[in-house]
Image (cartoon, rainbow, N blue to C red):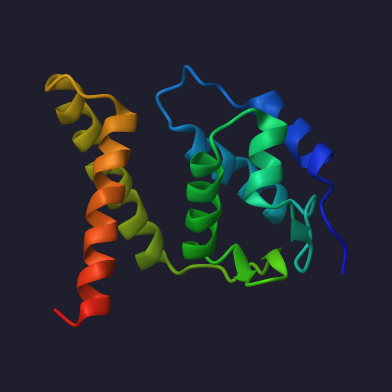
Length: 144
């Protein structure tokens, strides 16, 4: 099994990431990796750099890269094996999954606009969502 070199992937991503774009950096990472996978530049079975390593190479918050990897996993592009890493596993999602993803992105953009209108940043919004996720996990663990 081969590994996508952290430097090579970071260089590709750094060349296309635009912090000033409307599209979040995590989505830009997803798009680039997706294109590399479907074009054959990254092959099924290849191991991606760790979230931490790619974040360091790109000078990004690890949460940004982590969100990208999570999204790639939801899309069926990668799978994570605890203790081993994240591997390209390309399971092409069906049209319904694509439709639902587009709707989620639309809702998310609306939420960002609403949060900004209230004077909050995207980071504030992400922190709030993270707090909500933690609370939900705690509810599940406690059996509520």
